[in-house]
Every structure is written in structure tokens, then in C-alpha cells.
Length: 360
Image (cartoon, rainbow, N blue to C red):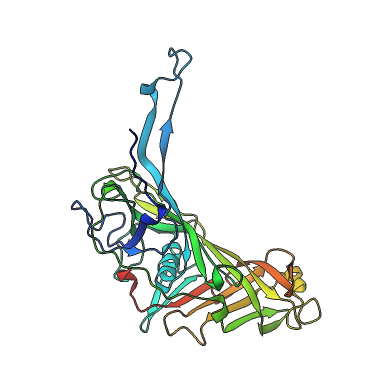
């Protein structure tokens, strides 16, 4: 008789914990007692192992492949896993550092991650510093005892930060993909059939809401810091991560980041501040190839409390401004890329979270 067990998707969870050594398990003594931080996803996706499998029909075998001729090699592969969740201060900070590999900490504690062409590394694999930079994590995927998957050397290859007044009740979300170059299971790194019996940390219940962005300004047609009414925004950050080299187990020696790319869009109301007329012309900004400063602050000031963040970006429009038309009126949909503009960073994210990156 077939087994009657059913595994509800809500029983499956996954968590992250900052590594102290790149690609090495935090607890490799058997059952993993690490206090992973549970990630607030609705559905936890299973990691995907991308390894070499070659199935060949060799000469002399006739018309059907032979089982013994298949080649499988777990060395030199990668592991990927998608994620999608409502952002909390901790998840936003950690995922931003996992994609940007840059962190400034001040006060108690303001985390800053910027994309500027010089602060972000071209590669990682060296010793992890006391500030948890370079930043990589152990990822624990846990459906049941003895069935867990622990991934090591995990970073984020691409991250989308988005908010829309018409989605998720206006709550800001993050989504993207995890990446690991540790595809060959060994006892001290990536492992299968793992039991995680530590006391996992519950997710935060502090969130960011589009309707809490008290500061929303954008340059237009040579005029600085014009305020706008916002319907939605989105930023996508990617680093093009690739694994490089192979250690004695065939796992990555380092990761290379060939280019940091930030693109996005924002949907704002067409009004007397942003229209098609003189001094307010969003089309002219596109035709002239202008660079504009975009500033969004969730909260009433520069971030100084949990649930507050600030995004500053230097943007150039990548296409003719589109229109979003509804009973609320006409809104501009402005697609852009972020570029370094003199001393101004292409993209900067500041988030207040009273937890050091090493404790995440």
C-alpha cells in the first residue's frame, strides 16, 4: 500500500545565518543546532542543484542508451533557489548585503549599502571580516527531520525591492534568487539529509509600507527635488555572480562579480510638477539623456527607527515615459537604470535595524 503521509507546504521553512568562514557549515557535528533566522515566505522553494549529467548512446550499444554510460558529476556545479517575501528590516538589510557585498554601519544601527563602482568587490572568497563582509550565509531548507538541505557559501545573485499601493496592502516586498557554488555535498559544507534541531529565530513583524514614504522627490527638466505622488516603485540589483576555481571537493574557491547593474521603474501622478510642458517635461528628460536624483524615505526623516529606510538613486530613463491610466487619472511609468554620477552613488539603501550584520 502507498504511504499516506502528506507534507503541507506550510510545514516547510527555511532560514539564514551569517557564515564565519566562506562556504563552511556553522555546525557540522551531526544535527545542526544553529539558530537560523526564519525567512517570512509563504512558500519555501526547494534548492535546485545544477550539476553535470551527461547521458550518451555509445557505439556498440545498439538503439538504446545503457545505464552504466551515464556520467554524473557534482563537482563544479551551482545551487540556486528563488525567494519572495514581505520585507522586514532584517531581511532587507541582509539580502541587500548579500547582493551588494558592501555595508556601512553607524549609530545603533543604521545599515548602508551602496552601488558605486568602487565600494563593491569584484570577487569574494577571502576571510570574512569582523563586520561580516564579505557576506555569505548558511541556508537551511527544512521540510522534516532527516530531510533538510544545508547550503553553504550562499549569496544573492539578484534582488528586487518593490512596493505598490495596489499589492500586498502597500507592503514593500523583496524577491530574487540565492546562489551557491558549493554543489558537492561534504560533511563540512553543503549537506543533504540534515536535521536542524536548533532554536530558530522567529521572523520580525515590522514592515515597510508604500504609504509611509513621507519623502518622495525626483528631479525633472532641470528642476531639483520635485515632490510627487507615488503609485508604485521597483528596483532590481544584480551582480552577475559566477563561481571560480575548485577546491579539493570540487566546490568554488571564490565568486566573481563582473558587473553590478541596478534598474527599476516608478509610477507617479501626472500633474503640474511632472507633465509634458516646459520645466516639468519628463519626455524631455528622456530625450536629453538627463541624470536625475530620486529620493524615497519611508518614515518622517532620515532612518532612525525600526521600519524606516531611505533609497537614493541617480537615474536615467531607458525609454519614453509610459502611461498608467485608471480612474485615479493618468500616471507616468518611468523606466530607468541607475548610474554613477560624479560623487553621487548609482544606488544607496539605508535601513535602520538594531542588529549587527554578524548576528544575522
